[in-house]
Amino acid sequence: MGPSEQDRSGDGAMRAAGAAWLLPAVVPVIAVAAIALDGMPAWIVAAGAAATAVAAALALGGRSPASSASAQPVSAAPAADPAGDLLRRAIEVRCAERTAILEHLADAVMLVDGHGETRFANAPARDMLGAAAATPGTRGAVESLPPQVLRAVQGVASSPLGERRRIECELRNQDQTPVAITVTAVRPEPDALAAIVVRNVRAEREADRMKSEFVAKASHELRTPLSSLRAYAELLADGEVADDAERTRFANVILAETARLGALVDRMLDISRIESGMARANFESVDLSALAEECVDAQRVDAERRGLALSMGRRSAGAHAVADRTLLRQVLLNLLSNAIKYTPEGGSVSVEVDLDNLARSVVVSVRDTGLGIPPHAVPRLFGKFYRVENHEKVAKGTGLGLNLCRNIVEATHGGQIGVDSQVGVGSRFWFAIPLEQAGRKAA
Ligand code: ADP
Image 1: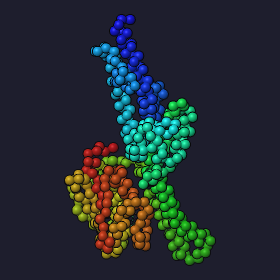
Image 2 (image 1 turned 90 degrees about the vertical axis):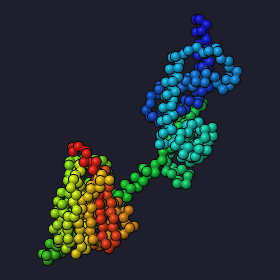
Image 3 (image 1 turned 180 degrees about the vertical axis):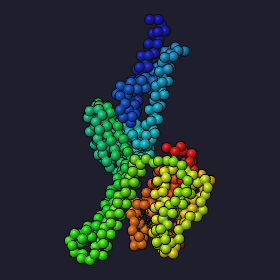
Image 4 (image 1 turned 30 degrees about the vertical axis):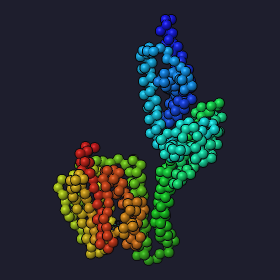
């Protein structure tokens, strides 16, 4: 071994010694990254940690803080070490990637020791708990979390690697943010480490609440027609209705209620298919002016029966969109039948099709001179099962039609739906389908 080789191996030994003091600092970061990347093989973590420590040591010239004051350079001009440089750069890139992943996670991630002292906290942890609480070297993070978290940290210190405890609780902040906290053992005793991942579950809780509310409302809506079906069917079955005309009337009520139940169930299924992403739209080139005229014709008898003037107003040429014809027909028929339902005799209903060149969309409007909608009801109008109070007396309905329209227009066609209305004057329901849709190839 020549002198220069000896120098290099001596340098390597120093670097390795330097690496040792860095290990506790970098292993946790890599370990947490591995947890965040769930499923990363253990050898990558180990290799990454060791390599990172070596790289960090190399970057610092192989000196620990304690030795840096006294350590002398091995030679005035360090020997070129292209392989080491390459390794260092590769490891630095890898380290930066891991840090970026950790810092950009949506969840708060912390690494704490068995006493609850923070070793590492990412940006969401600092946002969630406050920068002061999440300061490394303090117990601020666990102390700002509910006490069961510290118990879990102490518990996992003596647990096998990878053991997890899950805690659902609320943060002690102003909004009382509901969170799911996972505490995982990432390094065993004597220098035990646990990773704490805190996830904000407010959106999930809200989704659960909305699902329960939907089921409750749907059950209520189903029960009402079912009760009247049962009552009329019982009267007929008991033979208590002697009069033929009365029997026919009861049978017709049963038929109407059955149709309403069927419509309710169909709408619920249509909405859930769109919301769950299971509905497949059949896109084709659709002339919205022609479609509007077709729908007006389909509703003419109904309108006349109710003493209303139904007309096709402005119809722009070139109002073509690549859309699902059946679904848009459903939207138009629903808006038209609502306009007819909620407009008193003698009123009028009209449909217009315009091009909005600025927004590059086709705008279809259904205007009526009906009851109108009070301002407080407008924000809830397109929700599920919402009906304007007093309108129930005017006409039967499911309170799901407009919600289905919104799903079809916004979720399926990327459009927009809305209403302008004045009580006692009338309403204009409109929907806009982007003209860009027309650029899409028909399936
Ligand atoms: P429904 O089957 O009850 O008509 P929708 O979801 O289609 O269900 O409409 C929800 C509610 O919006 C209706 O119950 C009614 O109160 C109100 N509404 C809808 N369209 C009109 C309209 N053109 N004029 C006045 N109110 C309307």
